[in-house]
Image 1: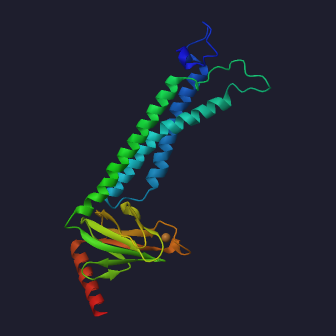
Image 2: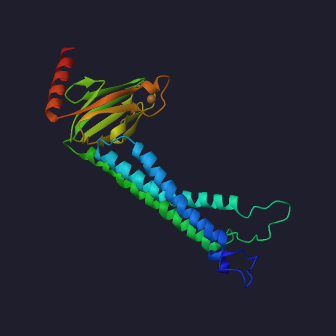
Image 3: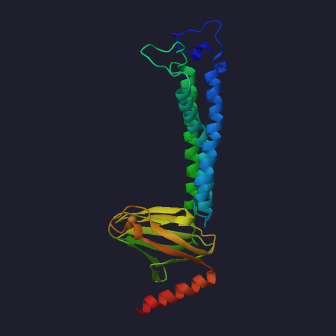
Amino acid sequence: MTDLMSPQSPQTPQSPQWWKKPDVKKTFILWIICTAVIGYVGVEFHVRNIVAPASENMSSIISLIRIFTWAAAPVAGLVTAMCIAVLTSGRHYGDNPPAEAGHEIRNSARTSAVWIVVSGLLCLFALIGGLIVLQQDNEAVLDSKAIQVNVVGQQWVWNFDYSNGARSEDLYLPVNQPVVFHITSKDVKHSFWIVQMGVKMDANPGYTTETAVTPNKIGVFDVRCAELCGLLHAYMQTKVHVVSQSDYDAWLTAHAAMEAGA
Ligand SMILES: [Cu+2]
């Protein structure tokens, strides 16, 4: 175990093994406590304040945030525990080094290797978990039966065009039907965001981006712009009405007739 110590400060035979040292024990106990507190607070106060999901995508995103919060908690917990341990013990005043210096781990190849491998695995876990959830959004883009809606952002409104000619500044969608959004902008960059459905996609001038979702709850939800786009960006919002298939059909027919008559 002496390889975890600095080569310049070999242990005397009387020294306890490193994990038996009081400051290591203290840090370990603080680590457990900090991890539990950070994980609990992160999940309870952050994840539970996220809006109620109105699509499978949003449910997956919330689960993912919960898992990531607990995966990150031991890392944040260890850093916090070490800070508390260092600030509360072994404080030294004066010009000379403290008598018991020699706990440094920076020269330990094993500690560095463990930390690099653990960090790498956590990053890989976050990447793969994120990609799996993102992929769920994109599956509906390939669904040939999906409803197609053109979304146009401009300072500072959203416009929605349907394939039968209906147009609206409010979005209407039937429940449990996949929808593909073809998103663009007339002026500057915007970001099309359906808060409760986990949909957020850039709206770029001269370019069409696509994303998809299947709303799974009847109700009225929020559409916002998520990209600072000018003076009234904060007011660039509207509603999405998720309704039954028959209500949707009636709305769509009526709005197409209105446009044809206009
Ligand atoms: Cu905006």
